[in-house]
Image (cartoon, rainbow, N blue to C red; front, side):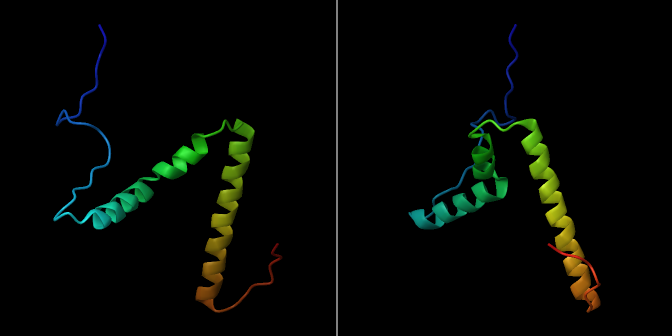
Length: 88
């Protein structure tokens, strides 16, 4: 027997935005904001083409390094000095 997953409200899944007083532009802005917050477009772009696991790993490592350098830069600014660190 096949199992089916249902929402609690048994309605369609996904993002919803209500158009109030015929203000479609406002609803469209809200919808775009929800899509951006959920990261739907970013995920779509990532899944558009196959990416080898080694490349995924390299990108993740590069992103982690960028986050770390950004954190170090912020700490340096908070302390008010620039340490003698080699930067690329």
